[in-house]
Image 1 (cartoon, rainbow, N blue to C red):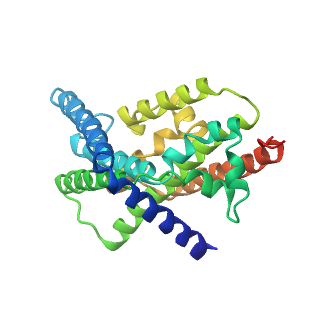
Image 2: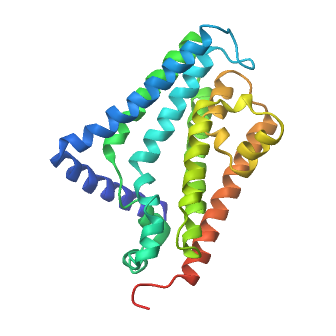
Image 3: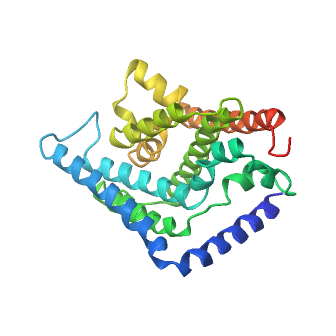
Length: 264
């Protein structure tokens, strides 16, 4: 199963890459646009830390790792499933989902990975550079275990972002317009990007760590490098990721059972 979908993923990626290279402007535009966004955010935090030394135990170095990690996750999502996922409501509303249902592959996988943007992989390079720079300023030496842990958590957050995106857009199976939900999602992601998860307290932490856990996306990996991860936090992250992925898959399947195709 894994081998089969790996081949499909690589095939789709090659197809999109060749198509993007025909229009080189489109290939590079995503890289420059996203890179500038994160660069501006880095400048914003630099301005803040010019007046304070720490924010809830984090110095500017942890924040650099935080922004780099968010950049890395964002690049991965944009390059793989982002553009496929955001068009799910339109595919459902217009009946275009019929095309994916009739294919002999998993409908959720194919419908969310049909619009990959390989140019966004370049954004990941900027993210990795920021993470390495921030980690070096923190005096961190990457051991195999630490590197494996960071990559594992990044993969978990990549899956969590996918799950949250699918859950919110699967509502389109029952409601024609979900613009308000999409606006809420955009605001939460923007807020989580601007405010590290270690700052959240009380009700806000419950919302952004448990109910809609966007606050975990880049915070957890930074906590690992800063030596702030304990076994309970590891268990919490894995549980949250598995739970939301399961909900996403089941909700999408339930949606397919009530889906009215274009031919019906």
